[in-house]
Length: 370
Image (cartoon, rainbow, N blue to C red):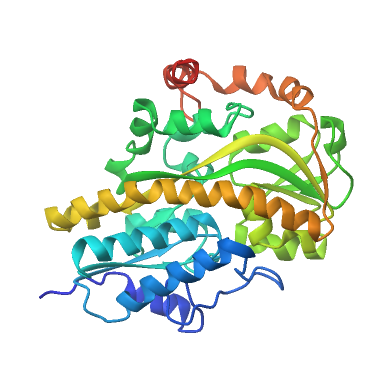
């Protein structure tokens, strides 16, 4: 039977055989700086190990008719990787090993933007990314970049699972990128080495790493910070060397990357909720036999509750680990931050390129009000 192993050669060249991904046979992870090893404590670590071993044992047989490669920007123990490994497990079950998915974390196959472009180029077949880098491809996801849009996780999930959420997920299929599920990363919070952030003025003069997204940068600029876009793979070293003072990420990202080793303060600002679309290359998906297309869609959908459970668990265990390692945690009142960033809604919710569609925004509000 004809093998469909697109991107294995590319992945081999990129990786040079010296690192291991979430689902590769060595079960080790590449690190960023001294502390981005993927180990996580307790049940999360066990889940990561079990999932990696399950996928490895099947993918390593070499019997797959369609051997897919997935890249992520996060350590192996992060829910992104765990969720993608779960998709791989389900694919093996549903196709009797004819379709496999090898998952490479820690930006081993590139940054999130590289991975998105890789879907179009055929160098990777699947990925899950934050929505912020998608601003360069479509405006449909920009609604999620409005600060303080969602009051809680339950509301955010309701929007993602709604008709408008699904419409956004599937909006760039004509660009070679097919959405198959909504994973998530959780609410973003600020860490830094200067002082605790309790009010917006505390951010003045602080150089903070953000994703390459204009709305994110404007939100921190309006609070007086100095936003600096930077790839995730460069972040630990930049914090360690003092090139930047701060970063903002959800708890699972902060803990699995061990940022507490180079950051003293954590402020639970919850300024943005980060959805994480799961994508497959449109061309690759369309070339699959119909039964395997169905398997991909079903496996992706069935992995969502598991991935969200990992987020929920790591939000708790991760925060406990950060505090145990000496990080000082503050819970600032969100209202002053909402007031300062409110003008961004008037600036960005309007018709035009690079703007949040007023129709999409209203439909999101309608779902939230249900």
